[in-house]
Image 1 (cartoon, rainbow, N blue to C red):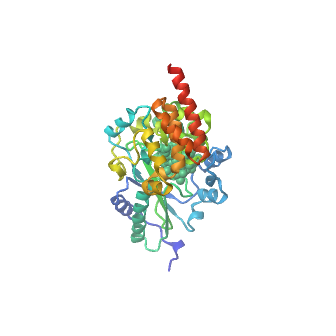
Image 2 (image 1 turned 135 degrees about the vertical axis):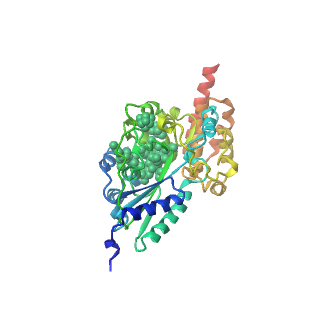
Image 3 (image 1 turned 135 degrees about the horizontal axis):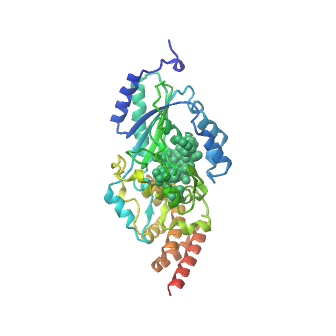
Length: 370
Ligand code: B12
Ligand code: SF4
Ligand code: SF4
């Protein structure tokens, strides 16, 4: 009898039958990569050695590095990574609404607006795992989305899902980059797809030029410490003062380097575009003033029950208030003063310090206007 490690390799026909069933579960793309060291693992090691991961220390842990370099460390006997994507591209009307945002409106990265995509992805990955068992009963599987020790974009490129653009996003010529990635590691040996080897960026440098903080330090090089997404979501503690003005009214995440990308023009609306948002549209009030007022009135428990199933739970109530102080300070709106003053009653020294910064910035704006 064959042990798990000695399963016969699947044929191309088996692979295509599995892919058709997996696409039937509602994934946008399904590709297969070999379970070997990802081709640009050296770029990841270099990134860490430059300290570009900032305070995301979990990315530099020894066990975390080992697993990223060798999928067998994450799943012993792993032969294949089944890479899948879902798209959150919105309708052109919804995109237009974002563009017309005034300075007092909270801008939230598209992936974060609504139900947390990890929850949706996890459910679908469970169904995908059952499908692997239907096709290869003795195979073992392990699924991840985002948080796992997997260099997702590198494996996805190798599985043919797209190329890595100069903004470091995985882009597909027809589907753009409003996609999210997940994967199953499995002991089933499935023939790999051809990698997506073409680089369709050409001479374009729009993303590099548009990044407000200069976080894209070169093609496919991103210093997370400068990226608004890192500053508003991952960083705990104070946001470096010099970067606060460039954040503008971006309360969570940043989409600028994708918004300017020509490959995102005319992409089809995605499966996750209608992520069951609460309040019938958005998970948060649209105006920064109303949003800050709401948060100030919420206890931690109320915050958890209202935001628990959204991506906004990651920075938490404290992180959101910190970010809103930055946005309110940048808004130049004197109507923001009362809510900024209320932030001084918060226990968190981080919130209070950002409130002081906002106050000084609003004062300067008033002085300039008079
Ligand atoms: C840490 C992290 C961040 C950090 C750092 C981002 C970064 N560019 O490194 C911060 C917080 C800044 C961030 C921001 C965002 N993130 Co993020 N993030 C991650 C996470 C958890 C790890 C990324 C990582 O390992 N970075 C280290 C660098 C070295 O690796 P890399 O960026 O993947 O780069 C690889 C390729 O560029 C490749 N490579 C390098 N050179 C070359 C050259 C060629 C020719 C080729 C082919 C490849 C190649 O090798 C590198 C190493 O393998 C992944 C999930 C995961 N497990 O992979 C999500 C992930 C990358 N994030 C995602 C998203 C959606 C975002 C945001 C859009 C969210 C937002 N709106 O605010 C922004 C986009 C910012 C940007 N331009 O990247 C998606 C991207 C999906 C996609 N289509 O690409 C991912 C895959 C999560 C998911 N499951 O969908 N993120
Ligand atoms: S997400 Fe925003 S801040 Fe980060 S690299 Fe892209 S444009 Fe720059
Ligand atoms: S904006 Fe231009 S350079 Fe940047 S990822 Fe898109 S095509 Fe590539």
